[in-house]
Amino acid sequence: MNAFDLGRKPAILAGLLAGLSAGLAAPMASADEVMLAPTPVIRIAMEGAYPPFNFIDPDSNELQGFEADLLTSICHAMLARCEIVQHEWDGIIKGLINREYDAIMSSLEITEKREKRIAFSDPYYRIPAVFVGSKEVLPGEVTPQALAGKRIGAVERSDHEAYLRSFYRDSEIVPYAEAEEANLDLLVGRLDAVFGNEFQLSKFLQSREGECCHVLGAAPADPAYRRELYGIGLRKEDEDLRARFNRAIAQVKADGTYDRIRAKYLSFDIK
Image (cartoon, rainbow, N blue to C red; front, side, top):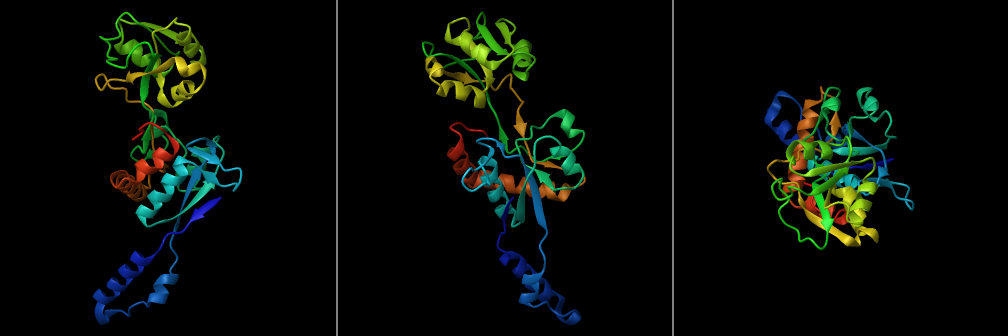
C-alpha cells in the first residue's frame, strides 16, 4: 500500500483568510488548530499487474508505473492527500461501488457497459490504433483508399476488426484468433498489413521477429478510431471528486508533467 501526503500551506492560508473576513463575529482559528484539522484521504485502487502502466516493484514491493507516477502528480495538482490501495482486477468495480475506496486508476477502459455502473473522469490516456507492415513499404497514407486491394489482418471480434469492416470495404480483411498469428503471417508475407493496438504491436516490433516491420501509419483522423480510452473510475454520485480529477488531469497535461512521465515508460504518445 502506497501513500503520499501533500503540503497543506494553501489550506492554512485559506483558513486564516476566512477567519479574518468573519471579523469579531466568530473567533479566528489559530494556525496550529488549522494545521491539526484532518484532511480527508482519497483512496484509489490499482491492480499492480499491468506493466508499464502499473506493477509491483520487486525491490520495494510498492506499486510503480506510469499510472502510479501520474496519480502522484494529479494528487499534487489537486492539493489532496491520496492513498493507493492494491486490489486484484476481479471485483475492482464492485469494491468501488461498495465504498472500499473512492476511485479506480488501473487502466480501466471507458466502455458503454461500465458507464451504466460507474462514472469516469476525462480520459487520461488512450492507446492509438496503427497499421504495421514490411519495412520494404515506406510509411505513408493508410486511408481506406490507399489500402484498397490490400490484405489486412486483425484480431477477430475486436474493435479493430469492426473498424476495418466498416470503413476498409475495398480491402481484404483477414481475422485471426490471436495477434501473434497475424504478426507471423505478416512476417512471411501473407499479409500486407496488420491493424491493432499500438501498445501490443510495439512489443512485436521490438522483438527479433519484428525487425521485418515498422509502423506504416496511425488510423486516419477520418474515419476516426475512437476506442481504447482509459479514465479514472468513480461512483456516479461523486460529481465533485470527478470535477477535481478532471481539472488536475488537464493541468498535468498542460504543464508538461504528463509528457515527462509518459516518456519514462512509453515511446509513443498516448494523450
